[in-house]
Length: 251
Ligand code: SAH
Image 1 (cartoon, rainbow, N blue to C red):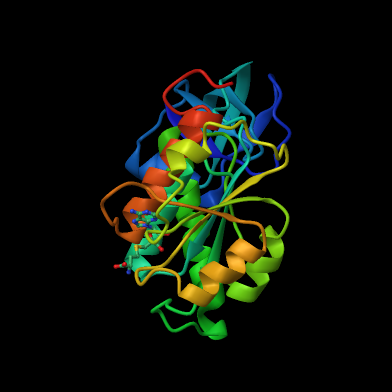
Image 2: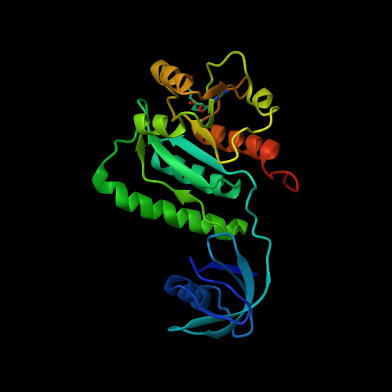
């Protein structure tokens, strides 16, 4: 069943929804949907309803919602990925996987060792590209809520954001606490859990000192050093399995 987003729409059985122009063209030309085909419309806020194509053509795409509501697939854990800004294609992969693994928000952060040179002038294009990636990944994995990708923060801003919050910082230099041990305690913070992954070059010692001083917990992910994109996916998966809904029915 094809899955489409109509962001912010108020979904209810009986309503007729116009597909977004890009979706309508895609549905007509590529997917070759026909009148009477069953599709799903999601609102981006965690509701999804089944519907029937009522009209489809080069100019129009209308779906009549029939219900019932479908499982919305939102994790009960509000997990925020803070990601040290990595090279473009790595960021793309991280964003896609984070969406599939059920992250609610992604905050890219420029750290001391972030390699991509950051230009404000390119920010808009990048944000648009990431928004499209989030949409495509959400469609693919059938999650009715869209993850938010925040504007890029400086390290100092990220530090202030997670001060006093539940924040986990995977750091290959951590010799004591593992993520597995960390996750044995129940999450204290009902609001959100922050997970901060370093860029390709990792965090610098002053960054780790500042994060620890702000109350974040450093953990190791095991004996191998993972690439940033692997570390992000692995750490999200472990946190979601322990405190969210990955690998099971959710808590
Ligand atoms: N350049 C560093 C590795 C950075 S890996 C080095 O070679 O030593 C990129 C990020 O992935 C790190 O900042 C950390 O957040 C995470 N990471 C990768 N492997 C890890 C591990 N074994 N334990 C904890 N964090 C890890």
